[in-house]
Image (cartoon, rainbow, N blue to C red; front, side, top):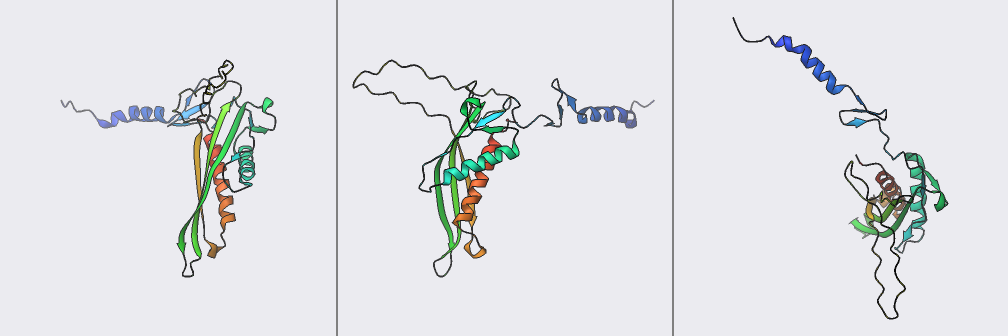
Length: 213
């Protein structure tokens, strides 16, 4: 009598095991998770409103702060369930930003020493926090890790005459950069590259507002 088992007899068991792995698992909040994918929203459902003041601009390119702020507001309305409000007192969160640099680099020149291809780089520092709770939402963190909380300002005693003023610790900002190139021979210019930079940076900023995976 042979002790070897017929492999066909294990097919039903293997099929049930494979089906159990593929079927989505229903969680307590009604969302499904299967193979690492989930029906949970990409954005925090507890956040409804965002206050976005005009970005600061440390470059010599005037008007860039208005273009970027407008692009960010437009992207928030288009890609997220959040609503941008003009009154900070009515907002759940606040998104602030500072344009730190906007540079142009020439990649290639033609025989007449004219620009044939160039590249522009736009860099910004952003800070997003929950006004109600003080949570810092823009700082990168691992999935499941609670967001850091901004400690309230400590009331300092009146300064003594001649005593040094203690420095204020900087906010934990997130640096984001976009790159855009242009070729004048194909109709590109510093203006078109600037618009590309603004649009790409707005997409990156709003993508940062998604919940961590």
